Amino acid sequence: MAKAKYIFVTGGVTSSLGKGIISASLGKLLQAKGFKVTIQKFDPYINIDPGTLNPYEHGECYVTDDGAETDLDLGHYERFLNIPTSQANNITTGRIYNNVITKERKGEYLGKTVQVVPHITDEIKRNIYLLGKSGEFDFVITEIGGCVGDIESLPFIEAVRQVKWDVGQNDFLVIHLTLIPYLKAAQELKTKPTQHSVKQLLEAGIQPDILVCRADRKLPADIRKKLALFCNVHYNSVIEALDAETIYDVPVQMLKEKLAERVLTKLKMSHKNEPALDQWKDFLGRLKNPTEEIRVGLVGKYVELPDAYKSIAEAFIHAGAENECGVEIEWISSESINEENCESLLGHLDGVLVAPGFGERGIPGKIEAVKYVREKKIPFFGICLGMQCAVIEFARNVLKYKDAASTEFDEKTKEAVIDLMEEQKKITDKGGTMRLGAYPCNLEKGSKAAATYGKQKISERHRHRYEFNNKYLDAFNKAGLRASGINPETGLVEVVELVDHPWFIGTQYHPELKSTVLNPHPLFVKFVAASLQYANSKS
Image 1 (cartoon, rainbow, N blue to C red):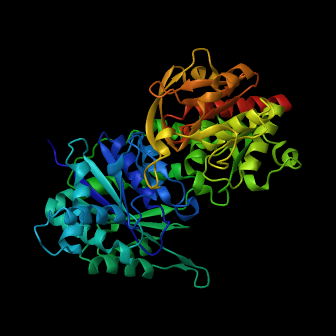
Image 2: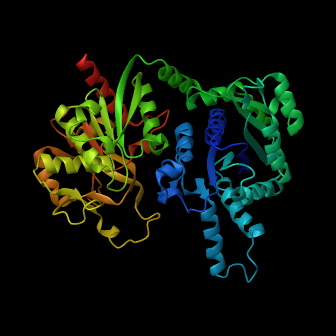
């Protein structure tokens, strides 16, 4: 069994430079050369996972098949590599310390004083090696969250230093992503911030092998030479990463900059064949040259921060390219919607997606949005809470259950069409206790959902506590909002669709989490197609 190579991606100067996109792009290039690659993210915050974080704090919480609540960068890894991630792909400081303290309480350290070095760093390394020792991968790319120099990142950086001596320099490589700012007053690019960032890495005992330099303009040869000289890297290992029109341009950029070739050369590996990016380039061609345009409204409560709905936005990009259609998202705060302004806010749209979320804030606006698009026959897509709002709206306005609600918002409602699962009622801890991960679903033969998927047995990812109350199932089915997707093990409703509507589907699960560049999710593809058809019918 061949040993895995370990690649670490660190960041300097500032956060949000795109370590996740660079990691995913490198992974894509190595994968396109025939290697097996996985990527993991180490986050320095003390939360066990991002599951209890407000989306405004950290963007969306991404969920894997095995039910891990993870950083949104894992979504990028899956969208680029087209392979699933797992609990092992996202580790936080909180999880590391929790594991160490649990072992200490069990007496596993034989009375020794538990310290950051070696106990915390050993636990970090154990998680680094977990994927590499599986024998499944040629490369394990590890993204270290935050910036070099951050106090909370220090144990991770020390663990990375130790890895080099554990595995040997031919199986170890560090890529440092940094910023080359342009000072308008001086009219020049400045390398000093990168020099200081590399100096901090060197003080921690790590020499970066490759510099990836974010900039808003091309790096002249003299700047590259200066960076190579002062940062002690080869000239060819100074990689330019210009601002891109879309994140999906970055693998092609890195192909031109020969990032994968530099990595393979440093690791003394053969790299004769060119990466096969034909499908990727075909996707980019369709993405950048749409033949038609639609405007879709995304109704949610965190719309001020689009990263809160990152996977939905990306799924629209994939589905738009598949339909050769540009999808412009109009971000609409559900708190701003009421019965009087629905027409002005939604009337011009070609489709409306009501987004997931938690809590009662903004619910009346979501319900009004559903009512409007249902009555006006505008294509509708409801995800998780969006599906539940569709159920509540239908119950109130079609079935005439005026008190219909979810017990999440109204514990005293007499018509709990959405209710807490029985096993959830005894749970008091909030972290990691929802219905999480992939569950099976059987789609009704002849339903729009089954036609969309092209099959009747599917598996999709979940993240929620509340469910459709099956006490009302017959009433909904008879009135025309059919439960067309059912969990075969529990009987829980997974999909609802309106019979007398061009395209009205709600899912309890999160289909956006499984959409990738090479496999756009069928529900998004068909929703975009339905919205395009509706747009053309208006003209």
